[in-house]
Each structure stands twice: as structure tokens, then as C-alpha cells.
Image (cartoon, rainbow, N blue to C red; front, side, top):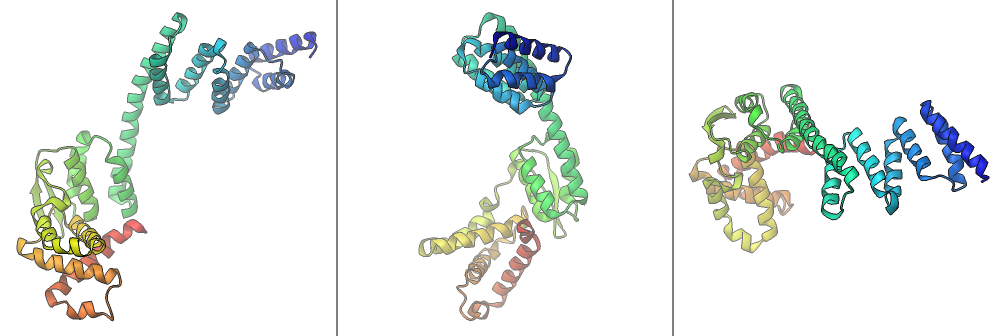
Amino acid sequence: MFPGWRKELEKKVFEAIKQKNYEQALLHIKKLESFNAASSDILTAKIIAQIELGHFEQAIGLCRRLMKEEEHYFKYLHIYLSILFQTSQYTELIDLLDEIYETEKIPAEYQEQFMQLYDMSKDLRSTQSEQESENHMNHFFESLESGNFQEQWKLLSMHRKYPIEEYLEDLIPYLSDARLNPVIKTGILQWLMDEEVAHKVEIEKFGTSEHVKPIELKDVLESDFALKVMNALSDLENEDPTLYAFVKQILYRYLYIQYPLVPEDDQANVLAEAVQLLAKKYLQLDQDGEIDQIANEEQLAWMEEIEHLEKLYFSQIED
């Protein structure tokens, strides 16, 4: 490239940037790049043009490439951090600066600017997280009122990572709402358990209500009743571990639907027998329907109830 032409193109680039004609600036820069004649200042102008046009990913990619040049590393790092800040990528900015503070000695002229970006990003990330949490929780409450089961279950699974304290007053009444799916109620109750909620709440399931303190509750398979059922199945664990694992899944789902309500203790053995027979039936270990024939009336009643509840509630999760 003739020196005169190069200088003329560079002049046109800076003039186009000044006039905010960024598309035109990029066309001139492209000509310079085709002759490998794009200086550091021209490449900086390219980044500016990309940012102004909203081509942030392209600007970030160019910054990353130019940061590999040791001579201009901190110059392009500063621009890169500014893009991250402008595009609200606060976590990426914070993580990058944490790493740089540990491994690099930052020149004096950049220290204050980097620290300002770092502190502002921390403040804004906190605000952003609070706003996201509020928006998501509002969506969740809307789904509890009018959403279908799949939507409620999905949102509940997502939102259990958020602190629950400020939403307790609005959330607790749903535990005693007879219209709400009992599986969703169990999920909400487990959320309260995770957050160690200490005051009593009322939970209603299948026409029965109970007042419980979430912080005092045990996990589904750790209740006294569940342990009695598991103890009745202890021989099966040694005889057929695969069948035992499947039986345990059926038991867990049944108790999850009922939780924290449990049958009477004297029902532990018959429930253990029923879930074992049902597991064999599900695994097609039932030859010619013999399981239904050998099961007594009480076992059959339990099997029918478990199947009914599974189809009514857990089958929806898979739909």
C-alpha cells in the first residue's frame, strides 16, 4: 500500500468515526486490513465502531485477539472490561479482574479505572440478582394461581435456589390450599426445610391438615414410618439389589405425594409388601397376572392406591 493512500484511508476512518458514520469507517478499515496496514489506533477505531453499532461479540473477539499483544495488553483489556460493563456482564468482569489481580501487576494509570469498574459491577450485580429473583418469583406465584402442573414444577425447581424469607408470607398460604397439587406442596415444604423456617405452618393434603415446623422435619425417607418400611425390606436389599432400588423409588414417590403425612405405624409391613409386589409387576416379573392373584385384599388396596396417585401426579412430570 502506498504511504499516501494509507494516510488518506486512516484520515477517512477517523473522520467517519468523528461524524458517527461507523459503517463507512468499517469499510475503510477493511481496506487497510486487506493490506495488513491497520495500526493499533485503527484497530481501536474498529472496536469503537463495532461497539457503537451494537456488534458487541465482534468487539469482544477483537479485544481478546489484540490483548495477546503484550505491548497493548492493558489498553485493550480496559476496552474489553468496558464492553463487559456496558453489556451488563458483571460476573464475567468481576471474575476476570479477580484473576488479573492475582496474576498481573496493573500499571498505575489503569488501577483506579479498573477498581471503579470492579466496585460498580459488584453493586450492579447484586441489584441485578435481586431484580431477577423478584421477577422470577412473581412468575412462580402467577403459575401457582393459573399455571399447569408442569410449569409449576419447573419454576419451583428453578427458584428453590433463591432465599425464601421475603416471600414466606405470600407462599405459606398455598400449603393449605386444597386446589394445589400435593407434589408442589411437598416441593414448597422442602424449600422451607432447606431455609430452616422455624415457625409452624399448616399443610393440607387429601382433606387432612397438619401443623408442622419445617426446620424439625426429616427428609421423606428418613421419617420413622419410612425407616420401618425400609427395615421390612432389608432382606430384599441383599437378595435382589436391582429390585430393591426400584421398590425404593416407588416408596419414595408415594411418600413424597403424602408428605409430611404418613400412614399409621402398623401399616409399615403391608406397605412394604405392596410396593415390592408392585415393583415386580412394573418390571414384568409378573407371570400371567399371578401377582394380582397371590396378593391379599389389603395388599391390593395399597397397590391400587399407589398406582392411582402415581398416575394422577407423577406422570404429569414426564408429559
